[in-house]
Length: 218
Ligand code: ATP
Image: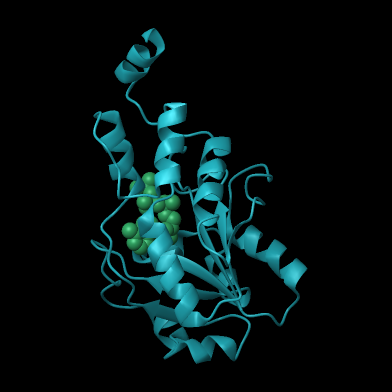
């Protein structure tokens, strides 16, 4: 069974990595692929260039066996729709391999606004990680209730179509908060892997315009 976690990863942090590891172990995933998105369809452009975001994801996934990076969304033109990504993965994997799309609760709450969202269930299972500050949608829609899996075993029984909610360790970390810390000259250390922090510092990422000017003068 293969898992995928898409995101802007602007930058990648422990709120992505720890839940991903827990889900990988709990579901006994053979592989977990991190898929940095090129052009996010539902939000403004990422702050760091895709080459930097990719490099940071590469540094982070190198820390754990079984994690890998998939570049397909960065190599595609236009908005990075998950349904296109899953279709291309399905073409490679064939129809029988169970495939799990990992989402945080905040992303899951907006799922029904995604491009061709109903087609996602024909392509993959959805595994939802609880996230601080994001409650499960209150009146869970009928489409979600009828697809809900009781355990990881339900996901192995079919290649796609089920939804599993996973109570992972709650880490109140966001890329937005990390970018804000750096812009204010504060340290985001211990919120993200040390090699990623070193990369951010070396390339002067997320500095405010003012700090960037100072950095240039030095
Ligand atoms: P930003 O603050 O820029 O919006 P983010 O921290 O939410 O970024 P993304 O790259 O947008 O990170 O998230 C990718 C995926 O990881 C999404 O499905 C999101 O819900 C999930 N995710 C991000 N942070 C956490 C967290 N702390 N706990 C659980 N899931 C998370």
